[in-house]
Each structure stands twice: as structure tokens, then as C-alpha cells.
Length: 139
Image 1 (cartoon, rainbow, N blue to C red):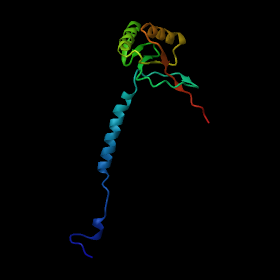
Image 2: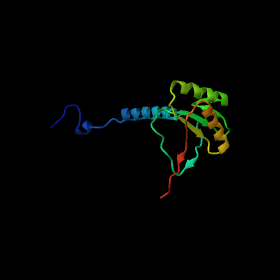
Image 3: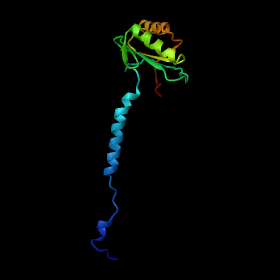
Image 4: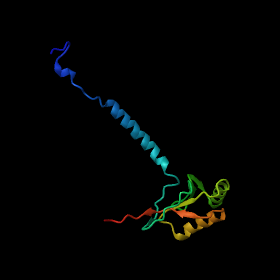
């Protein structure tokens, strides 16, 4: 059988991967931009624990972070102790059962974390969950 305008070799089916590569690169860029926004609060090195208790599904927690240099952060806003109490009290007025997650750097002392917990209690917090990373057992 003869084809007009060319030989048999020029009619092979070939997949054009250029659009596929373009789509993959766009998705990669989107994930690179969005991923840092998924982490709430300030980036701290959390202490490790062998056993952790999963928090209840009571809702989206307020994130309070304490960095290594003892700087207080409410979500992504730097606050002082009085500002932390105001922020927590304001949020608890609108949603009284909203949980609080305290992310304290592993290099802080228990006294440093305790002071932040006292401030949260003074603002009306009923309970505070401590953020930790689970220590994975090597098998």
C-alpha cells in the first residue's frame, strides 16, 4: 500500500511530552508556593515524646508559638505577654471552645513554657495542648 506525500517511517505515532512537562512544572511551582503557607504559627524545633495523645477534633486551634529567643507569637503575629492575653481573650469571646496549641521550642525551659501557659489561663483558656513531635522507634 502506498501513501501519498511520504514514506512509512514518517507516519509513526509519537507522544509530544512538552505539554505534559509544562503541566508538571506548573503544579510543582504551585506546591512550592502553597506548602509553606500550610504550616501555621512560627517555625520552632518541637520537643520529642515517646507517646503522644491525639487531640480531640474540637476545631481549628489557636497557635501560640515561643521561639528559642523567648519571642511570643500568636499565629503569625509577634506579641508581648499582654498582647497574647488580649488576642486569646478576643478569640475566646467569639469561639469559647476553640482549643489552644502551644508550640514551644525544645531548647526552652519548663519555666518559660509555664509562664506562657499562665498568661493563656489568665486570658480565659480552659486547656492548652502542647505541640510535640513523636519520637519514632527504630526497628
